[in-house]
Length: 498
Image (cartoon, rainbow, N blue to C red; front, side):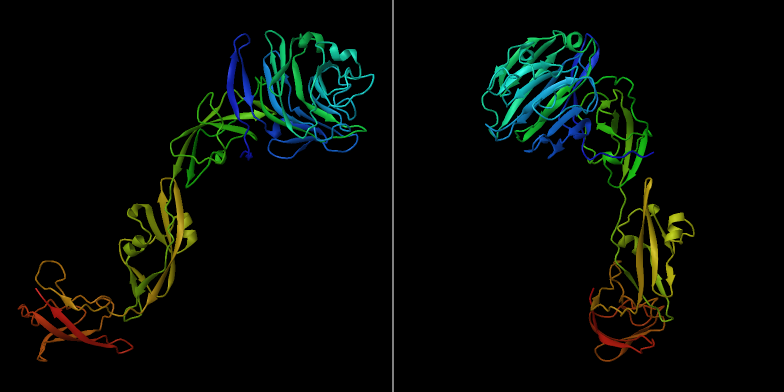
């Protein structure tokens, strides 16, 4: 089964090892697929979530998709936006942990967490409810069991802290740290520590439980404001992730041409790619694969990542894919033409002919049947399309090339040097020999005397007919009669030099 690929990857890194329990704490930036959006919560950008809009009786919450283990350390850093309405703005944002579900919360003055029992919340309240709130200022307090309509409940753990006006249209930093070994909670707001206390969260609030959802809630009632959150980073230990196994997949996978991490096939729906068997940061799935490399893949199920990783060795073969121009071959007197196979390979830029073969049809090339003999010239009776199969390692491509039969004119040089040095020793007329089989060639000196008469089987080597005696340096005149269906005759001169 081919996995479905994600366009974005959660960035996980090994943060620290809690030696007392032997588990690993993960740190991650925000990725929407690992959160549940409740109420009106809406993802506006990669990292901005609108909890409420400026409408009455609105509620929004963003919760971790799965519970996390509060037997271990936890930290969260975020930025919070409380809107621009001050005197008439409400109601605020709360950070909440609870074991019930990832779809909790209500609208109104309870800031979205009122009545969630059991729960523990750090509220940042921007509306004064007379008889319910301990202060008329914007304030922060720790509230258990969603009991924020009770004045005394605001002081159960620490005294409430007055905040300056936070409905100022600015983003405000929020950071919470939970140290499991000492049961310590610290909260920083806009870079200042507001809370530092110790709470036996498991036993006092959750009846010994430690697997909890966490998130942010906000609400409006009769008064309104725009509430938004940006989760920057959170470090946690997932609950019940020990059973998540690595994905299955072939340990060796081959690709032709360009391939990326996301092309690797596994049995999993959600995976993370690494270049190390442990630790390290995930690699974007659109990163190109390199021949010979090893990729390590973990599986993510409901936010839990497998500790072990699938190892895949990659082979990436390059394949030549030339843009083949038509090849022209000269028509002979009998209407046929010969194609030199080497001309075809040269046109395709092929040096090793063992990696190429020629076929008359695409299907034959695909099935590798009826390959043409490329050791001899190919006889062409008309224009034809040939198919060139190119192979490199385990890759192949099939390229079509048009071979066009044309009536080539002879190309006659204006000089040659018959000095027997192996270079330019004959009066070599291109597109003539073995193409115009019935031609006649006559050579005259400057006095009009015939010095040579040749045909398709007899080229002029710069001698007096067949005597073997070289003609002197000088200008000679030729008459070339093709004797083709056009009765073409060429006249001109050629210079002989030694």
